[in-house]
Image (cartoon, rainbow, N blue to C red; front, side):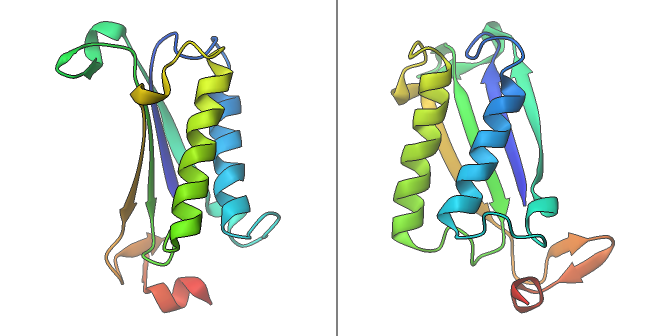
Length: 133
């Protein structure tokens, strides 16, 4: 389940991006009741994108931003409690790690659901049922 963390350079202290990625991943597992799950944890993958301030915008104006985006099967983030809880926690993680300098209003969380059957691991297209098993 890929996590893409995109930040304006300087939102977090240099070198803390990896820590944020791990904390956001751990929070996702926690909210889904999957902490320590040996099958799911290795499939938390992703990237960290650091962009110069002149390349990040909010309100069509140059601004520091934080984007947290998950691409997951349709059964992930399906419950409203998980959605509300994770988004609140993820926002707080970035806000607190920034020394409270990054406004919560410029931290966005987005979840993209893959079409059933279009989830591929190791060259194999898997359905939601196959993934859940």
